[in-house]
Image: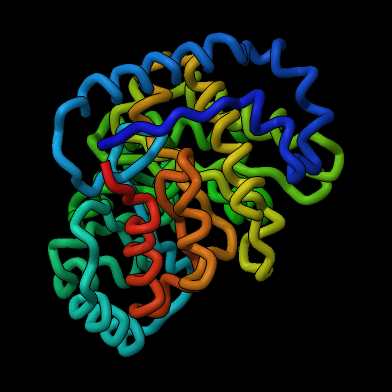
Length: 318
């Protein structure tokens, strides 16, 4: 998979950097280094040019991350047996690009129904899990139960869990660590509130949430980071491709400095926040947007397929 270089410094000079500038002076405190990031991407660029020299023209996917494009559908607290049967039927008949990892997250009550009727082309995720083994925890779902139903992923740290249910960073980190220890992949959500963006704290908030995951988890091998600005979730407002890209670049740079360059390269950073069939193509063109976590539009089979197939926007002749 091709890797496209991106300069964090050049992104910061763009016209859409609204709500982020006040945090730039704090990047040194979070160990974000422009020179290290630029050197890392320069080396990757050089490797790409050398590895592709002499090869014939072909179509490749341009992504800053080295992982496969990833699209998740978060069905949240929606659906009935009948409506989910129709949605699964639509997904089963959809023509999906092959070079995309596709995951859907039904409500817990319907995971078994979906798992037993959905094509193997699409994996199934849970929307939440407990911090450890099951027991006397009324209303909770254990990772072992999630695995027993065949789920390969779990969504953790979603803003609705953070800001409505009241889950904090440490609690979310414990969930992530336990899920990974049991072989379940984690879609790790981060993102700022509108007032935090307007106060210039977007980077501060995202880095703090990232650090909570980094402090807790033993490995990033089975983690996808989902940047979801809270002000764009379910509101119809969507971050511009430039706004999303600049945060994704900063997140990847944070991983480079605080975890490793290898983790920064292979960890997929996906965008969520009112993604739909109309805007997914423009968003997908950005090098550091490695896929999407989709809410409302994932309840419409044909539209979700369109979002999955937006990976074609990344394909260029090489």
